[in-house]
Length: 395
Image 1 (cartoon, rainbow, N blue to C red):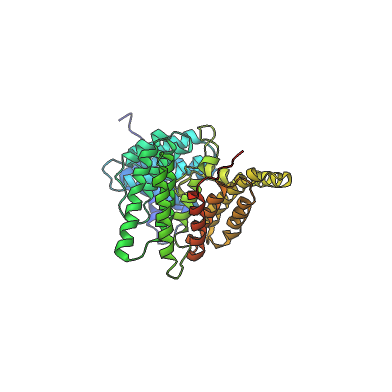
Image 2 (tube, rainbow, N blue to C red):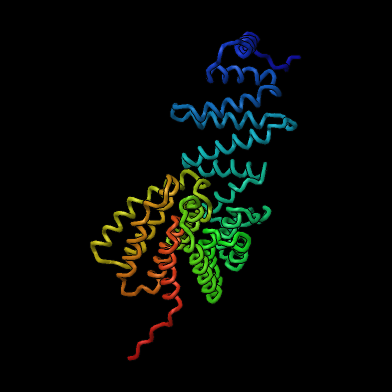
């Protein structure tokens, strides 16, 4: 009996009366009552305490309070009995909120530990994204591999993520093979519905890149020609754009990975190929925060007439602008960025790589915004440039 835990009986009574009263409680009163009663009747009140803590954290305006409340919610959720039906859901929700706040504060090691707990709990792929941000691509691949393959439904995010992780890990053949799953689904939809879905154009262009990375340039060229045929078929109907721009921009931003710094635990970068809503807050803000430096670099290069370097920096800016522009709404206002990219590429003395890339970028943007005839003209020019025989100069 000497070890029995003692409670403040008056506090318990007040909490019960408060909750049983007919008046409407504010959130602070409700939270205080649940804190008291969760100590006395954990089975009944710990789940309610977790919910109240999360609601309070999301609404608080007190600096630093979010992290404390999320941490308390995680602790309370862990104490819920294993047989409680809502334990899994509540613990997962608390961990998700907690790790996001940790990453927002730059506390990546603690955030990663919370993601590891989520993965152990539910197989949550969030850990794969965090590992990819830190350049640990092989480990991210193993997490993706343990999950069932995505089905034919749209969007096939799991296929995008797996292929991106495989490619980043240098497993190019496997990346191309994995990505074929979603391309095949798009082809089936085209056959069944009589018209191709717009995402098939974006996916075929990305497939071409994967095949070229795998040392299969002829197949890559065939994928681009197939993309051109898809856009030609889309051009036969009225355009409808923007409603799938999130898919387009995910693949577009992924195409810019080679021009970005390599990821490391000390210098994380976005998990390219993953939808932007899944990026860690610190990584997302760093990607946004790099825009002013790139703008200054672009101005310096323009003044110096360094067009090749300016084209690369402009494309990096376009990728960022597209990512954040689509997340805010319509893709249509992005048009000037792509027009300028094409103009810069045409101005280069050596445009064999830049111009097809810029034309392809604009073509896929035009598909995303429903301008299919213009997209076909751009992509046709890009394909012709890529397939033109090299010019041999005699000396």
